[in-house]
Length: 281
Length: 312
Image (cartoon, rainbow over all chains, first blue to last red; front, side):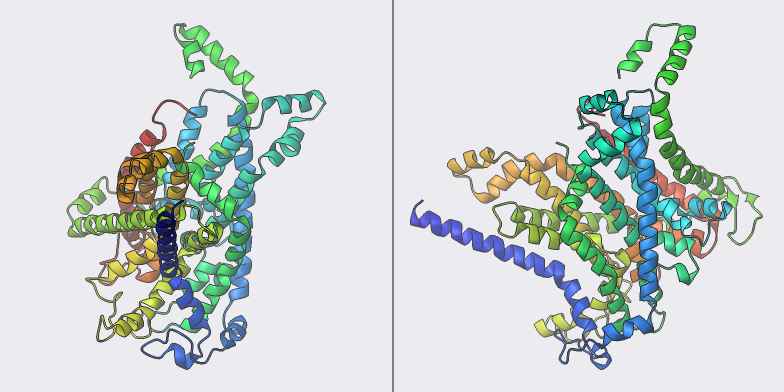
């Protein structure tokens, strides 16, 4: 490569990194605003115009938050709701996806397309009908009132994701295990599921995030503040006249920490899950 | 489908017996999909029917008495000014939101595509806004846009763009822009990740050939990248249109639809009428109108998804 060519590509690299860092700065700015505000003492939070860097950083908000808010309860409820949704969704999705991957039966295509349509049927346009059904079944103010709809709306993604992966497991592998005397359930749990681990991890992460992040179902079906999750808890801190911004932003930071840990470890699976639907190989 | 072909040219009787034989042969297959199918019918199918039924009744949430009113709700909705205002407000919300997410996502993806050091770090960082609770993003944007103590005003003042703090979310003219910015921020990562995956599947030799021909970078983007990415862009913007159309948590947490309903979209109105005001019948009628929009999107989506033959 000539010197001139080298310079040009070097310049281009600088430009690409420059744009990337600028974009990252814009996308990270809300996080910066959130984090930096939580280290300001009360007097500084309510000073105008806002200081971009805390002048006298303090961790007092992180000491107060445990006693002044119900953040521990909200986190615990978030875990109950998210894990409950994951379990229910997998129990329904695994058999259905496996059946579609291994059999050719009348109605399979209809079933899979209907599932795809459910994926598009956003909960909010269904919320009035759902409200009626949830109250009819006496589920109002129970965890199930949130877990059941969340499972229904994550089920489509799970079925399609697992269906796609199950198809890639060679039938011959299963047949030889069957000849060795394994039951169908054993074949599924001992051979098929371990081979589809990436899809399972993607499914579980997606479902967990969905249930952790959504406000709508908790807002509508749980009026008992003892069952609030993190989004509902944060929402409840928005006051009509006054808002305790210092505590609210601190709760927000704590509420996303489990997610940041999840991202750091499972990023590749999350990305695989996100691209599965839209980018066809 | 091969099974359908088997049936052609047979008379009713043998068709029935073949169906029974088919059911028997595939009993286990049907048993395995049954729980999921029944569950979806109960939790999604039944509420859909219930929504249609309710839309024909006057049905207050705090009472068990329902009065049949036929199509009255629909007639009143179509004759109301608020309906057309909602269509307009939903339209601009979706259009600006999807355009912003697509352009920003494309910009990120194009710059992440090459041989970037620390791509995994960048990709993870860009992903985070998508994966955290919408309500949290919403309160953070409320805080940034706070009329007195917000960071946005502080930055604009420092740059000399404005002379005194502005209250975006309280201003009926621009409040929706203050909310759509948050929605774009949340929706951009999905687009960026999808576009990045699409870009990485474009054969590299197309670019190499273009480079030999001395094509400018803009021309490469215009004549190689965009055409190759067309189907991915189509799919992603379609999905984004649906999600932006039904976006609820962000608007609800930032403004609740106000001020004077200027940030309300169709789905926000469904919630206000049906659940906040407890007018289940009217809310259901608005929901059915929402179904129609989604149905339209779904038809386009399925067309695109199943194009080029049967791959199920």
